[in-house]
Image 1 (cartoon, rainbow, N blue to C red):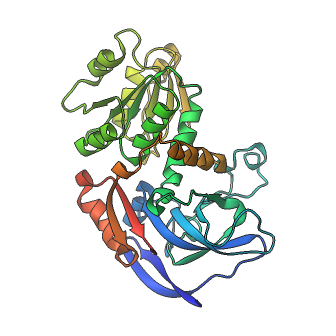
Image 2: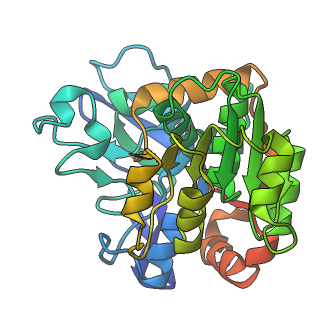
Image 3: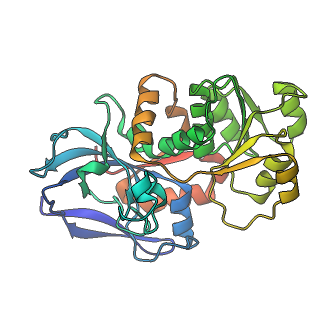
Length: 345
C-alpha cells in the first residue's frame, strides 16, 4: 500500500487519474480509506470552470464517508475499521469568527476539494478533530450525505424554534429536500417544497414532505393560502434555489414579520426591494455550511428515522467513472437528484 489512485481535475471538464503516494500521518491525524463521495452543485461549478475561488489542478471530494485505516499516537476515540465522515473545512483558528464558535465563516477558510486537496483518492490523511463517527450499520453512500444534511441542520437552526411552525422551502434539490426534512423533523406543523422540476417534487413527497408545488402549473401564493390559511400563510421561508426569481418570491410572499433564511449560494447578484423588507419587518438570515456539531445532529436524526436518504440517490458511479458522473448531471438535469461515487467497496 505505497501508492493509490487519485482523481485530478486538471482543467474545467477534464478529470485525469494519477498514481499518488499514500499519505503519511502525524501524531494527531488519521489515515482513512475513502469509500463513497457525493457530487454537489458546487462541484459542478468547478467542473464548468465557474467557481470563483477554485483554481486548477484540483482534487475534489468533500461529501465523503470513509473507514479508519490507521491512527496517530495521540488520537483517541477512533480505531481501525470505524466508519467515519469528514467535516471538510480548514480554518485558521485565530480570526474573530474562529474564536467565537463560527469557524465555518473563518476569514481564511479553505474547503476540501476547492481551496485545498479533497478526498478523491483511495486514502486520505485528516486531522482527528475533523472526523465524526458513523453507525456501523449506516451505508457508505448515506454516510457521505451527512455533509449536505449538516447544511440543512444548520440552516434550520438559524430559523429558531420551528415547533408548530409552517414552512416554505423554495428549491427542492438535495439541499432543499434535506432542509425540508430537517424542518419537519424539528417539529414543523407543515412543510411545503417548491420547485420547477417534477422529479424533485416527487422525491420530496417520497421523503414525507407535506405539500409540493410547481409554480409553472399552480400559483404559489394560492397554494400557500390553501395549505396554511389565507391570513396565517407561512411562518418561515428557506431560499434554497439560488435564483433571483425565488429570492423575489420569498420577499413578496412572506407574511409580515417573517424570517427568510438564505441557504443557497447565489451565482449572480439579486436586486431586492429593501423598502418591502423594511415596511414588512422581514428578517433576512444568512447561513453558510456547518460546524461539526451539526454533523452529530445529522447522524442523530438519521438514526432516529426522521430523515430519508435513499430516495434522494438517483445514480451511482464507480471511481474510475468520475467524469461520467459529472456528464450525467450536466446532460440529464431533469432526471438526476443525488449522484454518488463509489471509491472502494
